[in-house]
Image (cartoon, rainbow, N blue to C red):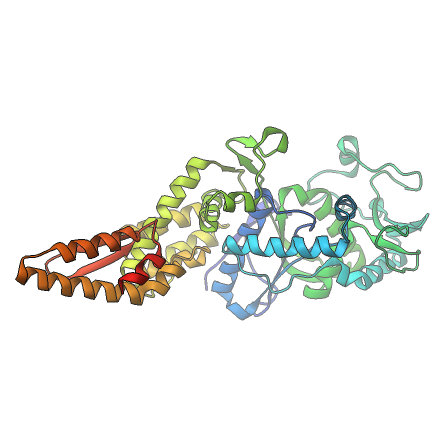
Length: 455
């Protein structure tokens, strides 16, 4: 079996991945807060951990991997957006989740095994908070429940900082009822205008951090294999998750391998609305960049390095994808095998850049089947569905053009051949004619609708 090696943020070194149970590999990734369109930075962890999901399925089997990615659908940002728009919170979250699915599907990502919504796990959050209070790690005060950071000596292990160091440079919510400025909210009160649920501490709603601890515990157990997310979540969100979960279930250990992807830049600068370089995934799709191109640009940079989106990279990725697709289409989409070199590159801490280099070498070797199946492991579908569906029509037209040419050779009148050839080319199809065969290859401007009248 292939040995996967991953850089574990918790130990700060690359380690051989050994799942707790090879027949039940479990991964949790922090998902979006659903109040607006996903921007390019939101999409990067989706692509990164989709690639890892695909690799794990390839190595351990499709049915042996459970991938959980949550939706935060109770949050002050959602409340504010609903109030601003004059719409219900439910309308905002349903609409945003639908957008998210559309945009991430366009990037070629697989849906996770489970996509829990925070509002569906309030009971589990309350139960975990009660457990933390009982074990002396949390305290109720003024309708709130707060986690006592000083009660967990290992706090800061993930980010590599002590509590005092964090306090010196952190922006923390100052509240008179906190025992320590670093203590964080597990539960907070809700007035009549805000969403709330009954609890032992009064009507209220959960803090942000507790939801992932409760949902991962419910769906994956107290111990599981991989926890992932963007580097911006390492502190405080992931640090707080570890504290909550390890204090609630001290014998379990929570997540064993922690992976964090770096941030996204645009044209060499931090993405910012004030700089005019802030893009949602939908913005790029509407500008005409296919989802596969966006994904390929992301895969060109290792997940632990900052990724820079540029139009030049997008144009180059578009050309490369077209070359790869043409190779596969020339061979009729024949099946092959996944290349061991591509697998080996991905198994080395998701070295997608090296995997793409290997993929291009396969393209040069003209091994269309291997190219197709290896690209799919990277989430790149080289079978253009429009082209695939048009293959019978293209085959029939190639036969028609060949027969028309045979007649022209005997009559010496090539006007009909030339007219048919021009019409086929007008549909964005390259016509390749030799003495022995006629081959029709769809190009980047292929329009199957224009072939209908030529049958």
